[in-house]
Image (cartoon, rainbow, N blue to C red; front, side, top):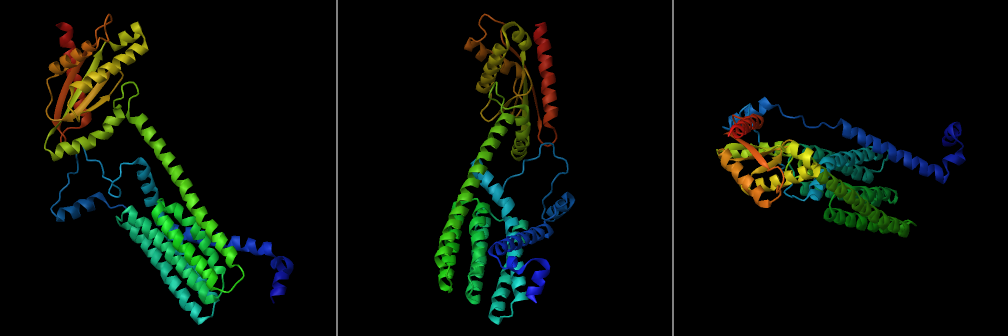
Length: 420
């Protein structure tokens, strides 16, 4: 019957050839991968909680949250305590992709076990496949648990490593019971694939060594003529997996460096080395949260350099840029430690901090005295500043409103200076 069916599609010589067997294996593996990806798409993901529901549940525990807060605290990252941008990027990648990897691993293990159960009548083998089916389902359940929980990244990495080790152990047991070395070939896929998702060396090396030892031991424990070849290919696969991990870590670290550089350009003014307007606005919610916890006001100072445009026209842009830098340094010397200083516009700076507003005229005099002592404007237009201040509660005033109030006060100060 097999010969007749083979003759209807392809010659029997083609079906029994080595290259066709390799092609069929690749197609079968590709099919299993697509089945796993399909399962990952069908897996339910957690829905975001509605704000009203969260407030209602918190209210049952005596916790109340205002619906309108002018300066909300920034969300805190709870799954990492590292300030290293490389580690932050690595943990972000691991947190995002390991749950999907668990879904694919559990789905493929489940499908393979079901296929073997449907095609094998051996009683002992069926018990092993039932255990493999239970393991696959357990990995799928674990993937859903970690998606909905706040497990640490270290725990997530070890869960991923242990899951691969358990699946490898199930394949080794299946190979021993069947007396066939073929199931061991799936371990090569695990050796190559799982380290790059772990994004850490220790769990990857431990997992690779255990899987490699089990694979070589299983190959030697089963009668067959491929022992040395399996051992050699297994070692190569283990090194390939760790090599891919190294390449991915290098790529992720490079991306982290680029991200840090991009963030620095977005939040740091190149001419003055102070914050940009966007950088200051990004930090204001955190400052507002600190002020709220300390029951303190938020203070905003608006400082404008007088006649900077005229100085640019008369002495050139380079001189104007040097004026900006001198003024920024003078501001940093005369404000409190911890205050946020930003170049807010072309000739304007904004300083934000905690507490009540200082005396604008006194601050302006101190800054101008610092600038004069530098001798930078010697023989040129004197560098003058117009300063306005404002202060308000973090829960009742917005940052933009405080800036407008301080800016208006600086305009009034310029008018008074012009008439004096």
